[in-house]
Length: 115
Length: 112
Image (tube, rainbow over all chains, first blue to last red; front, side, top):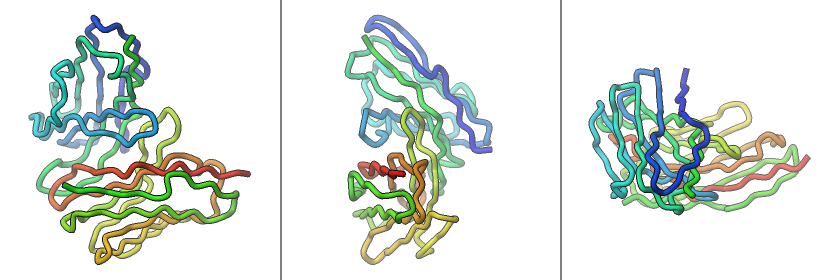
């Protein structure tokens, strides 16, 4: 089973709202990723967690706050977003992030609209 | 850092034709090259991948070839079907890391 699940599928929020995106995998993977994808563009890496520790932050604004409560779960907390943050947010996982080159498996994404 | 170029950006074929998408990479340290298919409103789905110790890999109608010397790799789809219509992304990953650098994507349109 190579399934990564994400909730919610769609999210509409105002610029003053606080919301969270959730991601889950049960493949025993120790690396999890957040990507942002704008229309007609490739996924753009935001964060990488390795063994529940943040290992890469691609200079993402602080209004995006990731959290990895355990090896199966990854959250992305959103606060004071801007309309230009509207995008498809993708979660992915792989067996490892460093020490080996492993396949990343993507979830279906959360379509976020910021009004 | 790594740079991945992907061509063409759009490819239209008739059902039953073959389709070829090409990518080049810049970092000779890259050694893993996956291809993802993304349908509208969905996440990218891995369709095939290749590592640098292999020159070609095939899975039914899909094949990938890798030329390490020239730093390019290609996706070949034979006997295309309308359900192959999607955006295809190539990517490259450096040895020892699972981070990906993506190409800009190719929109494949297969007409019945």
